[in-house]
Length: 228
Image 1 (cartoon, rainbow, N blue to C red):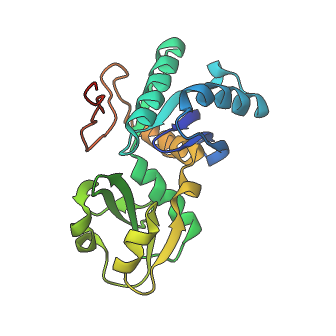
Image 2 (image 1 turned 30 degrees about the vertical axis):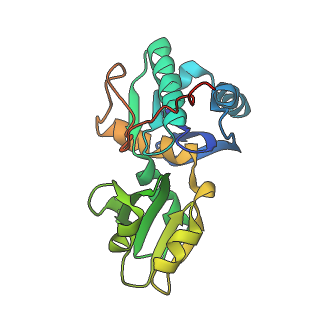
């Protein structure tokens, strides 16, 4: 089985391939706000380098958030388009689960894995995980939390790996002994694809028409100021 994974939930644009043996190959770039221009060429480049045609892909896995509203919409639109055109199943993979799985590879001795990403306007997206035999498992749900309450979700014991894009806000709240990881390096399409393989094998595929990202926070459209 070959699964193509798409990760567009942040300023990182990443695609990857995985099969029954795990992650196989990936390509990543810092795309900022131009995922719509870079995603499909990145997929083409990845498939060409691995000598794989689109019709050899058995399923499409997509990172579901929380994260960038625009990035998530682009990822889901591309994934659904591929699923409909190829008649392949869609697999929805929680972004924080994939980040935690990537963190396990970087910090194998960590007893806890905390993902704390700045959701702007005084909020954070927060998810806590613990390593397990079949991969990290969530301790509670991924939630939207006010910055003032962030310390309540930080583990009080040493041995925690923390992935964050706001080091200056999170570091002062963390217990001594915590390991900080650059979250940008852990957005990996091949990890999305690898989790996708396992979900397909368990029959956990999504309705391509109905599947939606996990936003957690309302998208606010900025209006123009009053005319002068």
